[in-house]
Image 1 (cartoon, rainbow, N blue to C red):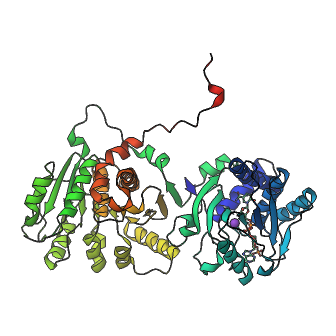
Image 2 (cartoon, rainbow, N blue to C red; image 1 turned 90 degrees about the horizontal axis):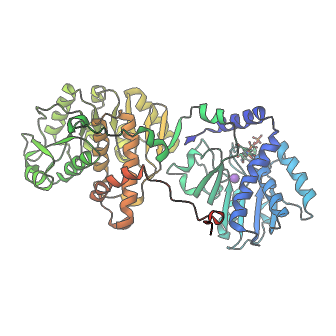
Length: 517
Ligand SMILES: NC(=O)C1=CN([C@@H]2O[C@H](COP(=O)(O)OP(=O)(O)OC[C@H]3O[C@@H](n4cnc5c(N)ncnc54)[C@H](OP(=O)(O)O)[C@@H]3O)[C@@H](O)[C@H]2O)[C@@H](O)CC1
Ligand SMILES: [K+]
């Protein structure tokens, strides 16, 4: 799913009114009617008090349309105008008049937090104060109002975006933002729903289709994309009947050190389980017995070093190499890594200590093959690109870094983001159970395994991150957050693949389709 920028959303609105020959007022009516339908379906006429707080722009206009429709359908509605500015939008004013024509219970105009009504935990708040038009911090009294929303403990439904959140700027004041239980967003989810500092402002979100011009939606390129099954399915490479293992590449996983051989075992196993034809583990000698006995499918090449790698040499031609897991940063290992990069031409996935060494010796970056993949966790990323002050700066820095070195950078997190130059792909699978030892090693193996099978490095990263998260989601059902460990993620990789082709569950039974007697 594309994640449109604020400017693209405004342009989509404009083009839609032009091409469909409707007024902006009609588009607002259509948008807010979708919100009404959503609520009506769930509330079925329930008389729960619904408090609708409207700003004075188009987000407020949406709130007024919703209020009018709820009133017409007999709901228990109380409407407020959060009067933060004298500059009212045209469609706000039109709908302000319309609601006054609909009910005698006119909106209450709030000019300070003093007039804040009594709201009980079982009531519902609709937040239509600010939408994507927020461009400066809300006034203190408006922030106080948002705090009162929170203190009320009422279910809070935000329209389009939690009020007080910018679409393209970091948070300035945590207290000046609505905490939404649910956000109904028009046309596109907003990038801020997925960034670590701002995702907390809405527990759930959903996109409502408001009939924006189809051509515009399909033809407009966005910088950001949300990756779910629908996006990865076209990447999947089916297997041919007469295929043999040589068609699926030979992965080499280089890493390990005394006490950290398991990292190589995990990465190698996941490379094979992701579909690679052959896997060789390259490790220091101390790991030989453990890998050979615990993972018979792997071939093993030993370095001359006993406890750490000191001179990387092998006589195979790997299709893809994953390097760094459990490798350590002994002086010999660093020298070996440096020499390896000099001679290497295979596609690379770099993780853990390989990234740490790159951070120490940035001149090595120019030795990486084009479109190498790096998969840093936040600390490793910071060592590589320096500190950032907020999520937006982090994204900008990673984009610039990716561009400068022609690298695919995976920013790991609750929503891992694959960055390649300007483009950002936000993953939607995965769960907090994955915050466990070795989970990153498994990911390195999967991505390397996919590249070995012929996936382009960018596609391999996007697809690999998706599969990794999906496997963990499936494994979660058996193990729960606490007991999920990295090996489980490998075991369910097959299910993650099969899930790609699973038919959606049938809808609830439909009365009219009962068989004839
Ligand atoms: N996208 C779609 O498909 C559709 C979108 N629709 C809806 O429109 C919404 C966008 O509406 P919007 O542009 O009128 O902006 P909104 O957020 O209501 O803000 C209002 C104005 O407040 C001002 N302002 C800003 N910050 C401020 C501050 N701190 N304190 C005080 N004032 C401040 C600023 O004006 P300024 O004062 O800068 O001139 C701003 O323009 C969108 O989120 C969606 O809900 C649907 O109706 C139709 C389909
Ligand atoms: K809002």
